[in-house]
Image 1 (cartoon, rainbow, N blue to C red):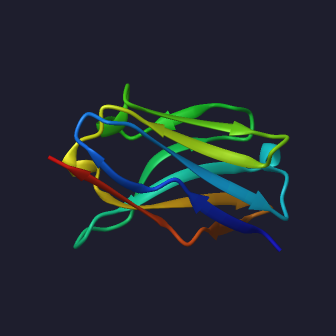
Image 2 (image 1 turned 180 degrees about the horizontal axis):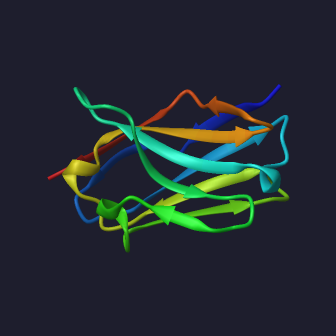
Amino acid sequence: QVQLVESGGGLVQAGGSLTLSCAASGMTISLGAMAWYRQAPGKQRGLVAIILSGGTENYTDSVKGRFTISRDIAKKTAYLQMTSLKPEDTAVYYCNAIYSGRAYWGQGTQVTVSS
């Protein structure tokens, strides 16, 4: 059974940096897509960044140049490096995996950016 566990969220000042981690079990992350989504209060959950099985990365426009998604296949962990954080980046961040035709979600980690 696939399980995803996020860590690394917290409170940071605007302009600061955070790195989120997503530890996966029950899957080979190089054979699936790993992604980060976020959901701010009163808003729908939306895609932030995705890394496909072949390593291709894609980002939503608002984080391009500031966020970087990566993965460590041996550690079965995906990361989201976030720099130049803005108050509008405040949200619960969720790790997502698409593997063997199914979608899996982590429990989410809160990121709060103060102005």
